[in-house]
Length: 209
Image (cartoon, rainbow, N blue to C red; front, top):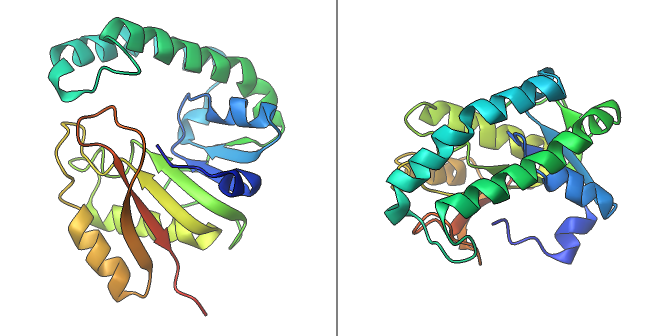
């Protein structure tokens, strides 16, 4: 979904609003340098597991009820989605306690990140900004993207659709404002699509000089 090249993966990566995902665990096994941040990480592994189990049936019921919004190709069905989701979350849970001690998992939450300027080469954010457009204001989106660009040379946000699969109303105003402020901001198609039409990311780089 982020169209990560070997060069991208060789740098320092920050995963924002990362949630109980397996990216950090799998990347660290390959000796990539990834830090994931999410206020969720204030909880213990057991507490996070309980939350996952509580929401699993709700997530699957939603996928079944709205299955016409998704591309059932790599994942063939809502049932298979549940299996893939739980497998990834189990990898996260197995890695979390050790990763937290190693400071690969941090409790920072957008739009405020407790990192120095230019700590990372790339900051990623999936299924948070734009996805929750109804809950998160346009101002928060702008502040969050600027914060990602403060701590990293480049920010990538995916997807550009809201939770209901519609284009986010925040995208065009955000692009215009970022460009007005001197940021390089563009949308880019990626070789991944699960939400129908959800195959684009936003790439942003801070002003130079």
